[in-house]
Length: 196
Image 1 (tube, rainbow, N blue to C red):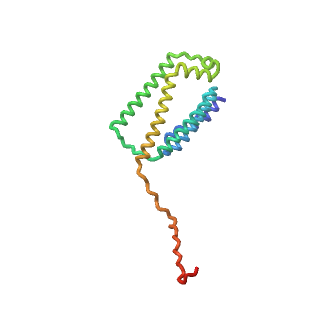
Image 2: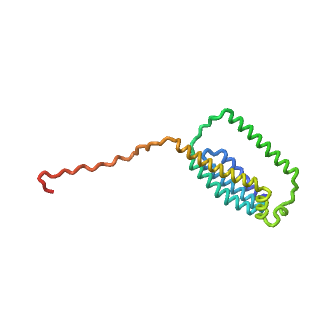
Image 3: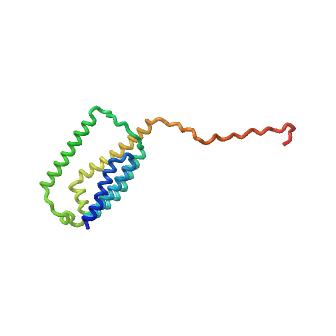
């Protein structure tokens, strides 16, 4: 059963991720990311990680995506100029990206070679929620707090950038409408003989 679910959901997950990267409209990209979040939740359910599946749907597909859409609406969906504003920006970004990828591969290889796999039943002794809480608030407390701080800083930065870009834009004059101008009432002439 697990294999059937994987082969049904995996192409949807991969397709939505690729479509999200290729989407030109930011709102469409955000909606495709929601589809991807739901497929990840299905994968968690298949692996008996019900708590993670619920968190995936409630926190990521719910709260985080509302925040993304709020930022998209605040900043707007306008075409940006793709010229480099800082000299060597693309080269530096590529070097840092390759460095991050190499560091990730090194960390995973080191962790897999030194860590002993105990099995899911041993790792989740006492329940899935208790095991995750124990891991987050003991062993991974510092990375958890740093990640939450980075998310707050990113949200504040997006709001500041959005406000700055809206204040820099020129005020647009309203375009004249095609509807006819209202007709002014003609003045009423008073009778000459004084009778109403």
